[in-house]
Length: 122
Image (tube, rainbow, N blue to C red; front, side, top):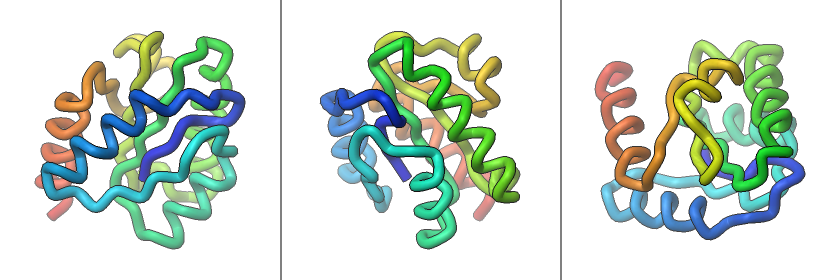
């Protein structure tokens, strides 16, 4: 599950990550841009997703990332999904503050992180 969070419309990095994940055998559901937390929750339920990638380019969208993680928690899904964040302004420290599991600083990072997580749940 991959999308640019609500209040951000930048998608170049997200599209690259989606392409690289797909090229490495992952089934990617791309929710697009300006995706509200409720849409992530609905998609995780509908697709039984195990990995959620939250993307942003604007620092003002950090609160949307945090709300999305909170919405997953409130829906009882947080313990069932691995949440990684990505985008120009993100960091490992930010991932911890937002309640995400990790940060992918490149598309190849996202492949490695998702792959390692899925190996643990298979």
